[in-house]
Image (cartoon, rainbow, N blue to C red; front, side, top):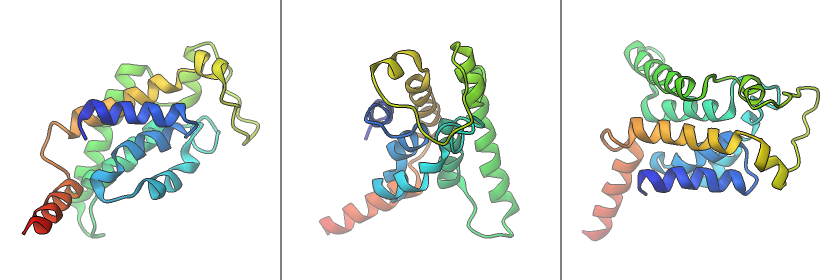
Length: 172
């Protein structure tokens, strides 16, 4: 899947009612051998700034998860691997912050003149008005673009390499 296709897929998922974190993670999950259902489940609690607490934007939580999939260390003692992952997280979140003004859900909502309610776990109803006034679809697009620009211009991920190997094995 091409970069623009993944970005569009993230926005489409959000417009279908999935959370911001779910939408971004799911658009890239196949690169790492993760199926769509697992991506949706593992990222479900991060919407609304983590459980609708309006903390770090769910799109940014997806960036952190994707950084782990891209560069996360697999051994506890691997300090260099951990540092590489942390560096990618910092780069992704800083780029998102520069483009959007914040990585905090409440701040992103308030920049658009919206109240950042935190007193309930009930998600807002998704309707035409929701999509008209909320910045969330644009933040989903922005986060997906940040990740795609950073990682799709580099070498293929471990998941894509595995997929290519599997396809070659099927041909032989």
